[in-house]
Image 1: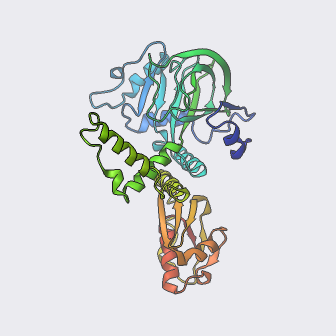
Image 2 (image 1 turned 45 degrees about the vertical axis):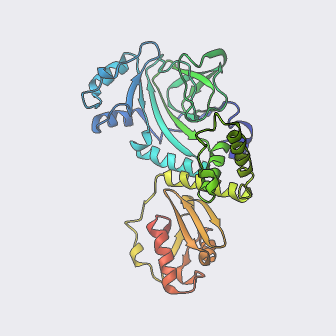
Image 3 (image 1 turned 60 degrees about the vertical axis):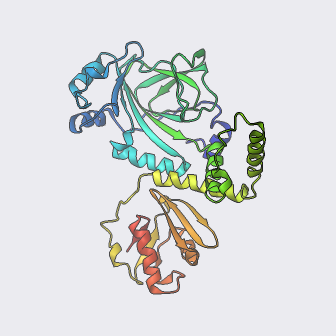
Length: 379
């Protein structure tokens, strides 16, 4: 906000950084606070590298703040933080409940894999030298302020495995400096060279990392699916391939012919995308809030049910099945249940008796499966 998703993807996604400035410095305060980080250090056992320190000017050795079992020694970590090091908490959604909910909601909205890291920097300090990320990032400034510098250089749309390598990837000229204040958001496309320096107060920010589904991912999935059906894609390249010109020409012809396979069509493309979106859904944290407290086990024809629409990431139909892509899982039902699902999708309360399913037992079983998956309110 205030930029809509459609405008964002058309104008900024994978193209150029975007800074959204807000008047409200508490915009992200509900997600995290410095007090939450202090409580984490006080109540949980942390291990390296899920918690670590970094400093751009003078590297911090992990041995200075961990024990022999890689456990964080909080006292030593705090000491080195006050000496100028930045505290990094990786996969922070695994530690903070509010971040877990936030990550799940963003992953559902974008239908892309996400993660959250937390960075706490002392005033005037810099954790990392110029670098690029191999995934797109959204910087959510929670407290304090930080200057983000954007440079020439980097790699255009790197794959996730093409991480920044010091000495290989070089920083170019400064292009832009952005003062990020509490409540602001900064989007940085993958491959864009940048660094950040805390200003005159302690800086706390969340980095939301987003992993794109690339066209290459879709093509690989299409070939993988085709290889399960067509034996030609499983044949090896002959051992004499490099030395026998006849074998070379034969292998080339077979490969090119196979790539013109009639199954490499629009339907195959959509099936591959669906498989990748399934992976994103399964990766999302499940939401079972209310599943134990409400009387799911007592669903009868007289019960009233309501679909938790916000937990549905997508619905797909075919002649044989209806597939419900939800947070943490994908459910499949026979196509005979399409009408009942259509009745539930608006999110209004409806009696089980009113569902357009042939038998009472089938209605109750259908509702029970949705309820057990955390997708149905029952009363």
